[in-house]
Length: 235
Image 1 (cartoon, rainbow, N blue to C red):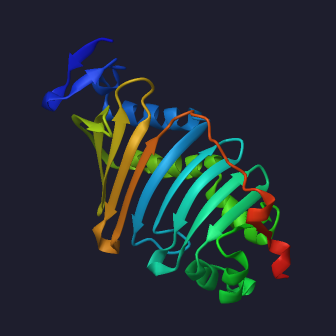
Image 2: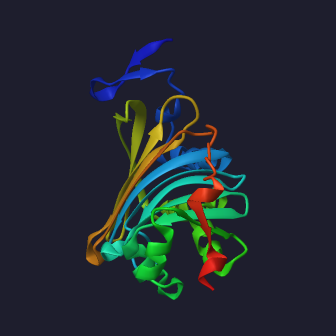
């Protein structure tokens, strides 16, 4: 494996040449690389955005509706583990999530019924559809691409080489009005976006997302029947 010396003393493996392109070209190729992925792992921290945006989430999902991970709501309104396989959806919420996000299910009594088990529902059900949206990789890619596309109306400059979790990257600095951000684009393999940071101090918004496990299999371990409770039991 050939190594070449990057800027700032960072060694770069198998350089894909993206760092030599213009900021605009880097941005376009990063969006195209993201659109091409069939699976992805995302870790996100979100501050200052209106609900229903969560406070944080960590999800692995693919374009075949397989998904596994967790979501934490804003304002201390609870956390849930989530699984999806096709139209089948399972969540393991804490008591706080049940009382604030699904009071129609019964709050504390529901928490007692679940007792650490998964609540099973369907993407075709009203409640399940809302959860399933969180696990929709295609929709997520469209959102990110749409937001990234707005950079075309922004001032974009190329930063220095760096690393994201040990993977070499080139930084794009983005400024649009009061909004500032950074996109870290892989300089090896495909020019995947490895990390996105966005800040809008006037609105108190801060977003930090890290991307990894591109096109890797998503292993959804379906919980056994004795560890699930069907949502129909709450009717």
